Image (cartoon, rainbow, N blue to C red):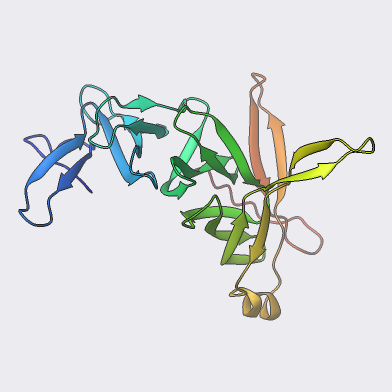
Length: 239
């Protein structure tokens, strides 16, 4: 599968489509296209589903400002595409990762941080990790629901970690009845690339804040306050 632009409007729009290319003959076939722009396609582990991130680009193919990508699922040949998430409420990032037999892993951006989601073909979403360290990229580990991820913290720009999906175990209650209990997902950080940075510099921890604008709208952000007495100059970053 390749993601590319084709057609007469390829140079004047921001739409991209998913094509299947035969590695023997070089023949190309459109898999996902249309008015939406698709990226990061991936087959489920059992090959029965095709997932991709997609976003509508409007009639002129240029409507990309403040436009979130949604998760789509389709048949392996691209038929019957269904949007699983609402881009108005959920901001997803690629790349995607395989999870279990027919699920997918995706990173959801949320208030300056991120969550790791597992999404099933019916659109059911489970949060596997949220908070710090913050997940930025993911790849599924074959044979189960575990994942390899890159993570960032306030003291390290990027580390490699493994997230073990919560396991279902059988336990006994006080009355002797057996019940199934699902444990929490757990993260194990594998690297320490930020150790030298932490040893040689002073790293400031950002403070999360939410303020209210004059019209009552709630504005979320982060503040990094320098050490020592003020006043300090202010740098405002709006993204």
